Image 1 (cartoon, one colour):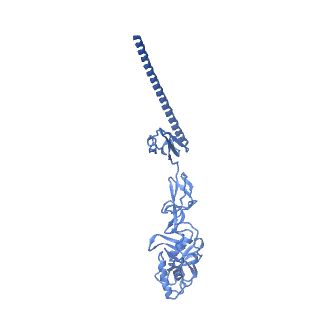
Image 2 (cartoon, rainbow, N blue to C red):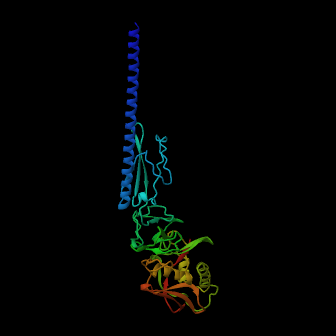
Image 3 (cartoon, rainbow, N blue to C red):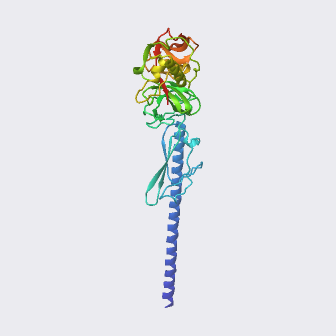
Length: 382
């Protein structure tokens, strides 16, 4: 009996020791596998970061893939979207100045969840160079051109045309696109489509430049003056179409001082009223001031003979070829190559006229009221 007990006890003791030994062996194996896995992962990280460094040295546009357990210390942490909020790893966005990303245009971070699902976080990194942006500058329709190129300093940019058919409606006028300017107020440098823009050391924004000059007015005439804001009930002036024009007219039949006429912009309407009264009192008819005052066109009857300065604006902004803002244009309005009368007197015997000659040549003269026959074109305020 004692022998059997001792044998069973010894056998039991040996069985326990065997189990312990096996358990320790398993633990050791697991630990070794863990160490090997960690080493393999570390080696993988080293290879991937080395590849990143290789791309940086090559300065080529590539995509860098990083798994969520990698740590890159820079700035601007990247938050993970749902359902990966719990994966708040220390992955941070690489900035263009980071040496690891020199020359790269895109960083792609792939986050893999426990279920195998994944999401990608993309951060575009600006490549070297400067950009040109086009702005519609208050346009009410169409789209501004888009230039995704990046330019190094120098004369490398060909300015684009209004390829997106930008339009701008202002005060019921369809304004004309006349190019681009480096300032929204038009006081910077003008650039016409097809011109060469020199890039310095900064991005450039080109603003659409709009003008009311040469646009069609509400009465069907051409806008030749814009004073910039409304006052005295008007802002713009339009010249009546060619079809309403009169040719070879005397200013008056007999000499004599009307008196009270002005020469500046804004005086033409008052001048015309004074002259019409003077002519009517002398039983004259068919004279320039009377013709303009009696004109009815497209339902508008508020036409008048322009003053000296108003007439000069017609020449500059509709006929000359370079307007008051330095914009080049083709002559419009079909003015004859002759003198046109104004409503501004220059004494008892004379009134001011404006020459409308080809090639942009013009000028103003004192002409005899009852000797010279000149053209007549009516205008109106609105």
